[in-house]
Image 1 (cartoon, rainbow, N blue to C red):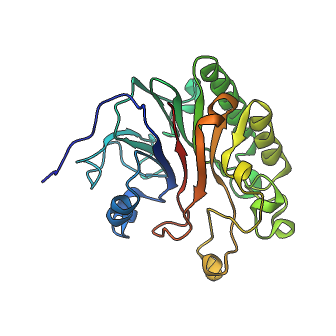
Image 2 (cartoon, rainbow, N blue to C red):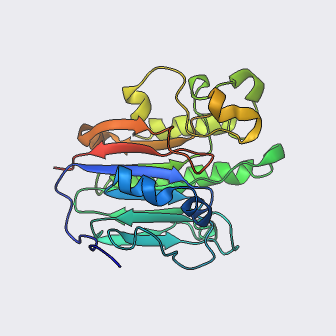
Length: 266
C-alpha cells in the first residue's frame, strides 16, 4: 500500500537527479533497487536499458514518483524511463527524427525552468557495424538539443556509449578503435561539447580513476578497470545552476553505476 503520492508542482528548489543504465529493470529489482531508491531518494531518476516489453513496470517508485516509459518495438531491448516527483509541463519521446523512434532511446521532460533529456545512445557494436548509424544519431541529437536550448536551459543525461578522453577509460591503448572508444565516437562527443554543452563531472573533477561501467569479466569492477560512458551534460546557461556532479560506484545491481547532479533552478 502506498504511503504517499508523487508531487505535481513546479520545481523551484534544489533537486537531486540521478541517471542509471540498469541493464534490465526487472533484473535490477531483484538486486536491491528498492533499497537504493529509498537510500538515495532522488527527485528525478532517469533509467536506460530498461528492456521492458511495451508496458510500464510496477515497482517501489509507484507511490512517490510519476513515471514515464519509452519502449523499443523489439521486446526486451533498449528502453528508457523517467521517475519524477514533479509533474513535467510536457513529455515527448525521440530526438525529432522518425528514423530514431523504434528503439525507445529518448525521453524529454519539460519543466518551467529547463528541459531534461534522458538518452540511451546507440552502441556502435562489435566490428563497428552500427558506427555509421551512431554518427547520424549523434548529429540529429545535437540539432535537437540546440533547438531545445534556444527555448530553455537543457540538462542531458544517460549512457552515451563512449569514453570521451583517455582519462575516461582504464586501458586506453588496448581499447583504441574498439566500439565506445573509436576516434569517430570520441570526436562526435567533442562536437557535443563544442555545441555548447558541458560535461558536468569532468568540469568538477579533472582526476583519473572515475568510471561508470565495468565488464562483468575478470573482476574488472573490483579492480576498477572501467570506462566512464555515463554522463550529465548541461547547456552553458544551465551550468550556474549545477551545484554538484558525482558518480556512485558503490551502487551495484548493474554493470553500470548511477551518475548524478544536484541542480538549483531557482
